[in-house]
Length: 194
Image (tube, rainbow, N blue to C red; front, side):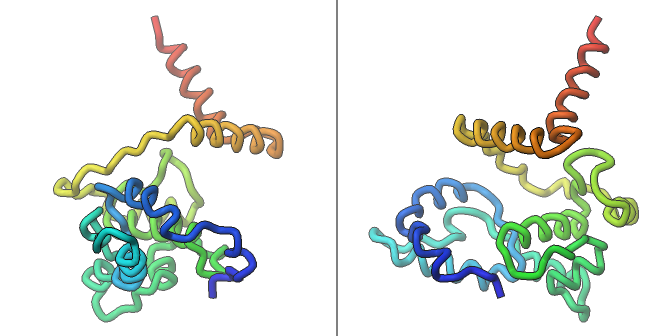
């Protein structure tokens, strides 16, 4: 189902070894999970095994169940992540296994379209089908929604990001799209300065 083998996991840290980082990362955040009770039960179980008492995910952060939201918005219809991808014209063709990162990226696209939130990082981004879906969607942002938590990249994360962009520059004939966008913005600002 997920393609993860025991051999792959052999050298990975146990939850208890990284629990402080996980709790710090999630503190005050909003988790958006499709069928949240299923995943949250696993996280709560691991948190309960830690020394020093019982902490629940709900005590650390807000949890939004996108499946419950989809069932409310589309009663009587299929509301699996794949069904929602079809309904909102989100490309999930790369989803051959249930991988956490890809599923999270797909859910982000579906959730934003389903709730009428921001539908692209940059204006004009995305495929034609995604663009059509955005144009068809009600793009009003819920004024009652709590502000998103901003997490600033650490020095190590920023360095790793630059290394990744260097690799993209090397592999791509045009260079990394992120850097091209930053350069265009800098040129635009410079040309508008008196």
